[in-house]
Picture 1 (cartoon, one colour):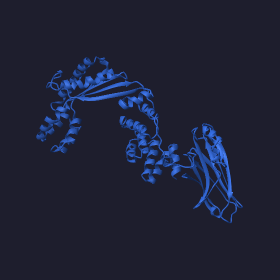
Picture 2: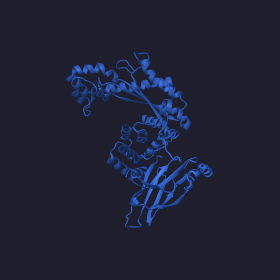
Picture 3: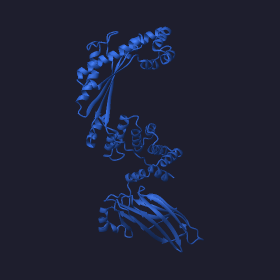
Picture 4: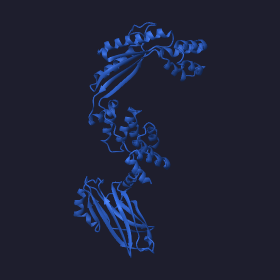
Length: 467
């Protein structure tokens, strides 16, 4: 018969001391049952054991049975005491009809979920010399069948591992969703009028117009703003580029508004005279000759833009020609951001959308979807992985995804997500679980203590378990 054994008390009874006792407390059955006032007493040639059980936190399925057997053990010697049978409400009927014959001497208790329930246990057996240094252990038969198969044995093992604590994201009053993009609309040199069929303009203009129209047709979304931001490249005087960037952006806005037929008040226009930030990125990622010296000039915001361009052009003329021909055209671009409100979804709607349009779901809606699956299941873990992808910098999303990784034994993945999970008590607890599983007991205990000090009950129980 296979059992998961939990140490309840250690006894040291000397032959000279005919009466000795010790008291302990413990939690069993996945910490749902408190065992208190555990007492062992030797009197003459009898050995007495007593303890109190509190079932207040035990949620017992109606068709489930658990058999607990207090046992005195030392080396190869052991004595099983009177067993305790805890039945769910349905199993009580089966027990009274026939199963009580399996446990003729048992103490039978029926669990009434949701109610305060306690009982006392006492048993005795004949004393033997090997009991001078013995342990009292509790043997749990979690199926009430007298044996545990390999699958259930593994399940019991996992039940005893340090546990994580998920956080339910805060529900938002109004969900918003933004879609952004970049279009390279060509204008005639030094001009601000727009020619829709000029060069690549048909394709680039369609990027903006088609995106807006797709959102317009989606009944789940309502457009609240459209921002168009125009950029010019650094060649030519800064004042001239400032004029070109602002007026080209305004021209593009008017063209798009007429095609999508939306209120002008939804549109905003911004401009950046010269895209030095984009130029620095190109330089930084290139193998251009004198790259570092050119980058130093380009990043010097204390120097006026026109002087920066002149310094690069005069000191590094060959490299400047390469930049002008290769990168400058891409620095003349129009960025757009479309923002909309998204309606709330029921759990059933969210279960479908998470497969097709997860970007429309709030974290709370994703969390509610996860609750419809078995914790630790593939579907359960996938929901939190998607949430972390949709909200990559959010501490709650990263914490919950890390917890899912932990339950899937992906410790390295979990620790990477925990780097962005903040310093909440639940995040510290999750770090403790990871450190414990990879063998760093010192850091695990430190993390559990930190989380427990912040009020995390899960961390407190983990700390009690591992200590």
